[in-house]
Length: 389
Length: 244
Image (cartoon, rainbow over all chains, first blue to last red; front, side, top):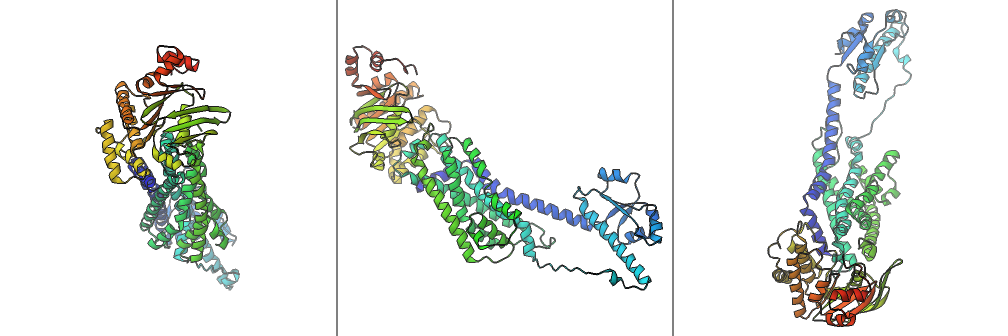
């Protein structure tokens, strides 16, 4: 069995394409893309929030006090345009303030004076500017309203029946957990990707190269031959997983977490725990993919079968996304779901009880062993050995 | 020594081997001659334990492959129809892998590989990856890895398929050497010249049955023909498959 194991590893490590795809691109791509996206988003949000707000004001002459106040608040007021709607549509401006001609009259008579904020909400980049403009206008409105009440000898507090205070008990870790919510998915898919090539190469690849028949003539029980292949596939999957976790842990350190007011709880200890947690998944994925690939006559056919099951590692993450519920004990018994939930808890900075780890490990391990046993029995079917079967 | 008695194997409705009985003695080369699709490969696959016969029995050196498949596999050296080398491994690594699967230690494997490389003339390419090997080179590697555990009995399925004249000559020379060493050699082929040049005993298979069995002279006498090819046609009752 070890001979098969060693040979499959050696053979696949010789293949530069395999090494680059599985051991390099597979584990590295996801963290790098992720970090790049987050970094870019954060930078953009910071830029938008910190740079001076430039605002086109149409009809500024109708409300000189308002415009003057805006300037005081640091807004760069720009000259009006002929066709403000057009400017928004053509994305020349994000937000335009328009003060109608009847503003002074409404203002003087104490009716709510209408001001229009023009924007296109479907342009997501406009969101920051829009909320800043709205916030400023609300602030001005409240300030003037309070002054008016005070002039009439009424305390402005009367106009405010409620003061809502939301006490956010989230910690920097748990806020970071929001960002890391996709981590379980990436971890599981990495394992499946790591196992995929090896599973196909050692079974349907062997069959396609017509080397399976001579291989099985060797005096080795067939389950041992399959066992060696399964072991090699599992080790490959684990190597991919390990590299992926290392890459992630390292890449996250590049993120400006302090500016994001969160901390990403993925240090080496968490990464190691996640690795141990996902260990049985590697065997599970290898067993499942090998069973599928063993039925295929060629590499291509195997890839199409396996394409059908690559959504399996996504299921738990989608389930959590659609049905965000609290951790319940039964979940720790469900393979893949348990790993997803527990990794999520860990990156939120929660403590993981050892018994949850154990149930997850045991249930997943049991299913993985079952699949391994099925895989081990496959080469007793002549149909799977000869191309013509 | 191989004995097969009334072997029969069906795949669904197709009767691949109907009734095959023959003996292959040690120190002899036995040729299974027959047109394509006659059941030669299926017969060999039953002998090297990858297929189970529906009925009939067989022994290799007195051992039943169905009862003790591993013991039989240790005694057999097989060059199957599918040569299937590992392209990413060198010729030496291909042979070494099979040696390890046979449970041999490294020193034995190295010594045998050295000897086989000499016998088969593989020194020039033994350290090269088998990707891009010619058919002749591939067959040599396939033979070397089948012989690495020094088996008493050797089964070859269409060994000269795709070989040029020089490679075929080298192969014949090697097989005759195996006979000299007292091994039991069985080869299947549809090529007349091959059996004529090599085989001590010829078993003609057609439609899953034994059409004739004997030495070349015996077959000629029996068919009343002067050339083996004519005898073959007479014995199987048609000329189908000869052109393949």
